[in-house]
Length: 131
Image (cartoon, rainbow, N blue to C red; front, side):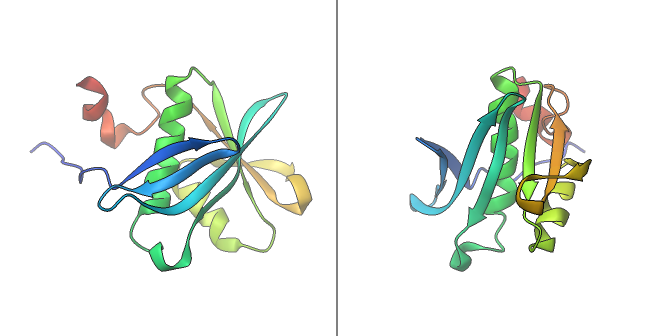
């Protein structure tokens, strides 16, 4: 049996500071991702879905799309930051395949990192890359 994935629910719209997360069903902006850059490359400073739109997978799909975007761009790794007062962010980034790095992140938070290769972008969606 071939695994199937649900159709895409969100897309990323580039902005000067990152991306707006747009729900495809009605073209509503449901959140934003702020991307910052330093000597080590891009990092996700914030990924936030507006409260009324949480719990439907938009954040997970946006994280996957960000990972895919930077994989396609040839970025070797992507970092994310979890604020010190949001424990759910630690769980979220771990679930998205990012691993915590030793030592404090900016503003007392935790750095997470994910190595990016085409095979690692999301193994369960490999069939999407083939077509």
